[in-house]
Image (cartoon, rainbow, N blue to C red; front, side, top):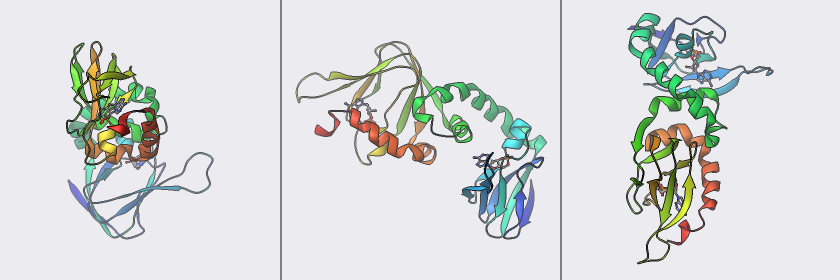
Length: 234
Ligand code: CMP
Ligand code: CMP
């Protein structure tokens, strides 16, 4: 891998250019701006830190650079050329993005996240299957994952009165989510059970990725908590 340095203010990538390399930040910080159709000024999107990578889109999709990246401080970057990238990264990452693209596009809770951010969610998904009747989440357990249903149905049950059997409180189908409460409310346990009603296929997102990728959904998820009439009273 080649190493390159950029002075503060220097453009590393310019939107619309042809792209031949992917960059990994070794030192420094870089800002990402994107000119959206109809806008006069590019919009600031994010700052890249050491350890992060950018410039993968042009290589993945053989497309012009989709944003401009400018050194915010003097920066040292590793450059990965197209061939190396193709061999190491592209196949696995693109296969996964392609596989989940339609599904993620159909999930209502993700509809406010732009396509690019959504495709990054694909990278972190883990798939699990459960047979009819199998328990997915146990009330009172610790929890570190968020669930999205790819196919099949599930239901949540909850102990509403101490000493009595849990009662069914929620039904789920493809595109629905559950398991967000424990991640939104730190230091709490799972607030309900979730069972597979029939053959159930889900993808999970772990706690770190949930915070990083679904942070923008915090408010919507919290508002939706009001749908759980009984969770507060436990
Ligand atoms: P690439 O299109 O090769 O070059 C510009 C890079 O900006 C792009 O790859 C991504 O790595 C990065 N980027 C970050 N956020 C976005 C975004 N919202 N849309 C497009 N590119 C983005
Ligand atoms: P979590 O507490 O992480 O794990 C159990 C999940 O069941 C919970 O998140 C919610 O997604 C879901 N759930 C469904 N109905 C309820 C309810 N009435 N109270 C609490 N959680 C519920």
